[in-house]
Image 1: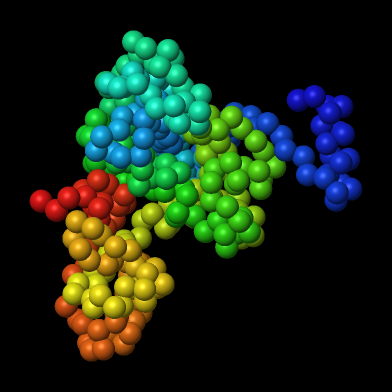
Image 2: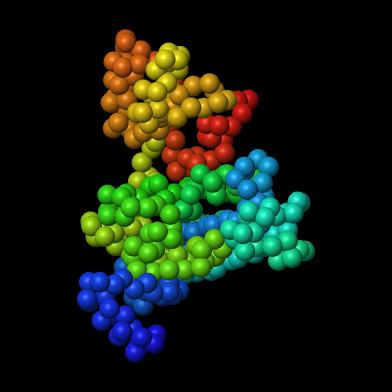
Length: 299
């Protein structure tokens, strides 16, 4: 810490006319011994050649393994991991512009699969800031990730209700007064660890505690099977999404919202009771997985 500059930053902030961003520093382990049951978690981030989990490849994998308590308090970092991987094809220019990773950087590099398996073997939960992307990118190469509970810090924390306008990692850090080197796997992992360890702005709840509470709840996927074509705009306006492979609209909701969505469909879409619409039940074990991807080909 540079004390003179830190003092200047404090003076600027106290005027109310300036906001000062501080460089993110690594998480500091809690000096106190845990007085509650503790568990092991992973924070994971990938950089990839694209966004299609079926054809694109991971070119960088970052992992932080950490210990947390039942209260959601993070106690200490157990291990860090960051490795590059040479894909089967050249890295697209757009990816290099975004991440800074070049073909020269990854030449001859390979992620150590055995090390990844060892890191993930004993974890209770894996957290990513866009779990639907990172989980699907990882599962095909490292099957152990298909067997674990996952949580999404982007979509399973009520950031907007807590006073944040954006959901991107960089925006959230700025709201908390920090900046970091984004779009590199381990740097994003460190940033996310800091966010999870902080209390939320309005409620004061620990961010990790809030995330885990949401992740533990089952999610129901309600399919609007046979919905009339002319109701597509109504369905879209309600938040339903279109699954091309299943040729059907669907919505993901909590258990306590199911009857509301059924009532909406009965009254607005079908004009009759629809008690037998298909419903998929998902938990943290299969949520965000490629096997529950509504855009995956029907087999």
